[in-house]
Length: 391
Image (cartoon, rainbow, N blue to C red):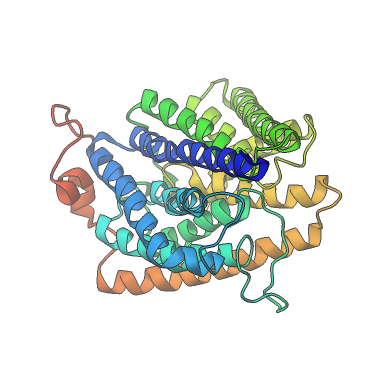
């Protein structure tokens, strides 16, 4: 067997394996969100997550991939493996969004937006960052470095979520007489399972984005990338727990897990560049940002049941800028420009698309339907039919 053939096979297998780990993030998001919402909305959340995977992936296959990368060519590994790896990413942008609008969003309008995101919005962001770069040399040309999508995926999903929350508003009863009404999670074990599935999926997310494992140098780089990814998650979890205990004398497992996810988002931009210690600092800042950002968004009545804005939007920005701060070869100015341009584009286009869809078919469920539960009104199947539904 020729050496080139061997490398082709190994890199193809590596990409398929990484893709499989990323797909584990689909049940990760589903379980995390199902545990954080009330029992009367669990079936709807699960349905939304399955539909996102199906609709976004097919939209990317039919339209989005070619828009992002300009064609179906790859000489270093199977093009089909490369496509599947990229396809695994696309649904995550809407998964980020779906949790933040849960308990009051209707499924069909969200599915329509998912198709637009998978076919147009996300591919255009990819085009100017990882892909064909149709506008190279213009004012909107992006030279930011983003290994696996702190901005391209996480901030993109976060900006779309912010637009959606501004359009559909908060859950009924979340903000009453200027006060925040706490709506507790329904199933903490599912939250833990979902977060840990996401954590494991991140190893494929970031490790797979190195692109090759068929040489000793690349194998070491993949291993270091995965180690740094894990380190940032550890640091994020620890600092979130410490801050919660200092402030409230309580260890909130949901905040600890979101702290870990914040660290994982933050390290995603340049996990392959850092030494073994810098990810600790990046994860510490990321976990702390989650804890402090959650009440800020509540102050502005931006109702986010799963903390997705704090985890993905805030830390997507932090992680991208951190790459420009801590990596000498990465320009901070280029990172900042990329963050700003992707933010302006994604938020404005998402807001317009969401606004138009909302005019045709309301995104927000009625107050009565929210009171009864989205399971009954959107799915006809209750996740826990023997339980008394919470108001």
